Structure formats: structure tokens, C-alpha cells
Image (cartoon, rainbow, N blue to C red; front, top):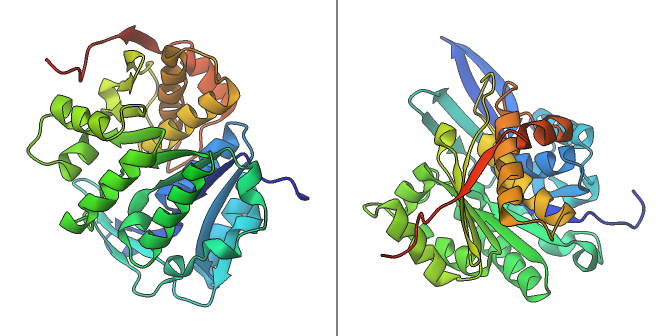
Length: 314
């Protein structure tokens, strides 16, 4: 890849999902929220990297191979002699999962060991997932996000609520919301992170923290809303043959980022349509399969977008 660095970098966790399939049968799948976003951005045609640490065992080998297959810049992936981070998924409906990763590889990611000069070429950096709730990695990522934002790099943040995000995560949530240009969260994320608050006032709180941010609020099959300082838009997803919703949220934030990078002068409605189309395209394949650019462009033409007053204060 030479000295040229990617336009986009996602920093956080790559992990292995251990999924119980039938009785005592377990299947391992490569995953991780920020890693999935990096792959989706690459699949949509933007040079991309995942910045994080993975193990040197078979699980790390699988993540390395999948990263290479996705076309990610491998200079940003650090291999360390530590145990892998595992997500144990006992059942998917209703969700029943937990994480195994005391002193695992992801916690030993060192931003200072990334290639020299990458910050000057990268235009966008993404953060989120459980990495921001795992000490001491979280502090390093927060510092990295703040330094990049101060240097003029656009920051996106996917709240991506998980059960290990207790009351101690509240300060991290607010800090990331205050520096991000784009904040993505689902209805489930909002309920987990701001419990007992209806969606409209909850989103208004985020807008008070960061009035210039774009908020991508997703509600699964119901569609998504984009709230910006210029206005608000609501999108309904196009009809598709649904295979699997795993990775749809990661694909949607990747779609919005790619749209903003490729066509910064387009109107917000077009950016929202592309984001929803990317999430829908991901649902047409099993597992967290990145959406193709061809499929996303085709679906974007069928996304219905209209202006709305959702989330405006009374």
C-alpha cells in the first residue's frame, strides 16, 4: 500500500463471536462493531483501516485473514501475545450473551505504535462498540478521538449499547457525543443509555451537548431519522428479501460516512438514503457481511425520504 494512508480509520475492538448453533455445537465468527464498520466502508469504495489489537492465536489469524480479504490497511492492526476477546452468544432471540476478555489482546492496543504520519492523511475516524467500555483501552481511545478532532479529523461515534455499559459509561457517552460530527444510535441504544426518557427529549439532550452534530437514529425495519442543524429527515427502507439483520447498524453508519466523504456537497436527504440503503443491503446476506456499493446504490434509489419534525422541542 506504500506510504499512502486510508481516508477512514475505525479504532476499537475486533473479536470472535462464539455462537451456540444447535445444542452443544458452537460456531466461531469474526466480528466486532468498529471492525465491521471498517470493512463496510472498504466495501463501499473508500480506503479503510481498522486500528486495534488482536491475538496471535487461531482466532487472531482469522481476524487478520478477514481484514486482508476486506482490503483493510493491515499496518493499523497490531498482533500481541495475549488471549483473544470472545463474545459468547448462548442464544440470539432473545439476546443472551457475555464477553470473555480479562487482559485480552484488544486491551493492549497502542495508538502511539500506529504508522507515523497517518493522522495527516486520514479524514475520518470512527469510534464505538464495547472498546469504549473496557479499561484501560477506553481511556486511550478517548484521548485519541479528542486529539484527532482537535487536529481537524471528523469523528463519528456509534453508541452501540451493550450490557457491560453500566453507570460508569455515562461520562464516556457524553464525552464522545460532544466531539463527534456524526452520532449513530438505535432505539435500543437510546433506551439503554438514557433509560426512562422518551426518544424525542433524549435526542434533544444529545443535541444540547453538540448542536452541530448529525444524529442518525435507527429503528430497524421502521426506518431511520437524520437530525442535523439544517433540518430533519425520515427514511423508510426499501422492500428487500430479509436474510439476517446482523451488522445492519454497522453498515448504516458506514454508509453515511462514505456518502459524506464521497459527496460532501449532497443534501442530507441523499446522505440518509445512502445510509439506509447500506443497512438494507447488509440484511440481504447472512452474518455481518459488508454491503456492496452496487447493491447500496440500487437500493438507495428506492429509499423514501421526507422532511420531518421528529425530535424538535415543543
